Length: 141
Length: 416
Image (cartoon, rainbow over all chains, first blue to last red; front, side, top):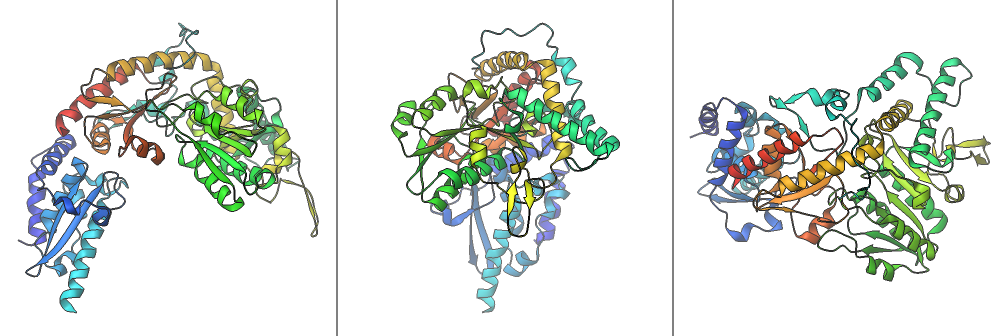
């Protein structure tokens, strides 16, 4: 599936909830289901700065696709990073570089997430793109 | 808790009536009534404060201390009446010892800069504590680096209280200044400033008290305390942002060089040499924050009308109730259990990240602060990523405490 198709799928899922609090309850459930990251990646080297809860992110290039794994000390950031992973993990570096993953959050009705400096959504998306850029350079180089 | 146990809440303290004075308390957040428990970050403003600033701009906006015309005289009178209001509020000896600044942070920076230039040399020592806000750490680190001075730190115990035996050991004839917080913004601890100041004076050191979190909760008497400097912000005292106070004993302020050069702070300027104005103007270069000063004056008038002792007594009862109710939540632990504490409660619930709790409470209309509260050293001492902080003001109610407890139970159920 393309990033856009996955994004539409997530938007549909969140449409099942009509009030904001329920959307957050769902986001928490999504966060709880995020597969655990290998403990060796939970170091400052993999830490994303700008988040109030620590977030760790790793990326690998497997068969030309970027595969991300991530974890956070907080459940809501885990939910956020889970949705980012679902959209971007397994895509080509080019697709990730050209994507606008942050727009998802206003579409699912929890748009203020992208405004607050404390959750680091922008930092997460930026770091994911930086990994993709590096892989793109490597593939093209 | 609050030490003023000898004062009983007065019968005429009507919190519901007081809440009507604060328009923002009638608003809703995410479709729910606002429960504002982030007063340690900034306090809400009563109509009297808002109106005082509107009236200034509508009726007598003009520059102060300059014009001979009617409006300037009127603005200058209001401006200086506010200074006198601040003096009386903290019982300073002289009105000229009240310097208007941008806030607590700028007040501390002025002292670090100007006291530092006049009194701090290589090998001298400055003492702070492990519970300081970053704004009472960094200016001293910068000064020490610049002057070759040494920064010493009074440690804290597991309850979040200063270890005073260590303070006694740190004091010596090289100590030039002791800078500490009156009430911790993270732990709520009330420090025994009178004793700390008396001991510093024994070795001839000056003492700066950061009153950002005490001025709104208890009566402050800088003469009884014998503080050499006392600093606070207007916006945490129900006044506007961008205005603060530096109180300093005139013997120090007169001996300190100006912080900034410009208009107002001069007596005579020639292209060769400038002589500086007298206190307080020596430290107030440029056009001041007139509407902020008038707003701060109105805030102090408003507090005086209620009575700071009535406020302290009411908050004492409210915070005791909050501690009791929060303690019923399984797995909740307070960060900071000082015997002397006011109006700030920091806590964690099980191993749930404070950020998650803050987001869920927000969706329920409850505003708290989460994170390190600009006190990273405290977080390091307790080995925690941050806390949830509920900080109270005299317009908060027991019903709001109940809403906080219900919100925390809901968040716990969701997040565990």
